[in-house]
Image (tube, rainbow, N blue to C red; front, side, top):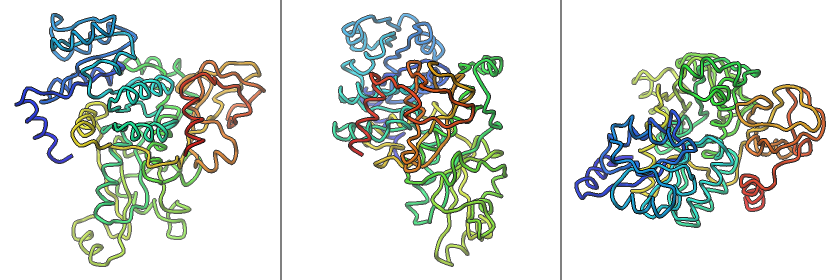
Length: 429
């Protein structure tokens, strides 16, 4: 990331800018547009949203005059408006990936099927793709990354979200030669497996969040999805299904994340987990083989060892996404991306009793929630990835609340893009 600010300044001085198309204009999308407007060498050139008023508001909140906003209904209208230097809004998502002058596409929708389509369209049209949509990444990120590399473009998760923030610490420690033992994130509320959009609606509206988005945080699914993104980018795995999720302070983490025979909670090292009590931070547990490094770590007040915690106490979500945009465009580098075949999975759990013939919904809604498991164990037990479930998924037999769903329990939407990509991922990776 070193030098990005100077590179952007040079672009600004030369009357150049990275032109960004954003899909999704919710809370995170609006914040991202405002942040880009403060930056040199970058322009939020196009915002696509099913709700046109949200796309327009993303610009007006950032101080853009309505005279400089063009509502476009066709691709040619978008291209002409961008050539004139206008800010463009549209309700046709695919145009974000097809506009001639767009350099980088950002998906901030949070829906696996939508994210799969946006990513595929961006890759096909030779645009770099930044996935704020970690839900899609956890489901089909490995194959999307492979396809992007084949096309000569960057596929990447985002800085600012917990997986990207963890990756920064991991890369730092790994480059220095530390042994990284565990990585993870904080969770800022207890898990309520019964949470639904109805139960969190009042709190969600106060925070300007969609109720289903908040419900996915509260029922733990979002945490599981983020841990899978971390796992697939590092090779680390959950120690147990669902993770340990201890409650701790930052100072307690090195003692907690030790092997059981050393007084800790772990069955093995090389794991990903989450912790109550340290949100909104992220962490890595590291150690070293050399006594002189231990001596200096103690001198630097990093603890008595042999394990130490590297902790970042904040993550700025979509406000940091422009750094990933710049890194992809300037250096052709990902902030975080799957390293190959998946190593972890978000498997599906019945949130309530389900009846034969019933249609399911999706992440953060009423019928299902997610839990992390190793990819090998999930495959062995035929467990169903939550990102494949949508409203066209039909239950083939009665399922009890808390039961883990398998592929043979449901009829999936085989026409969906995310399903087709998942099949390709299984075949190739």
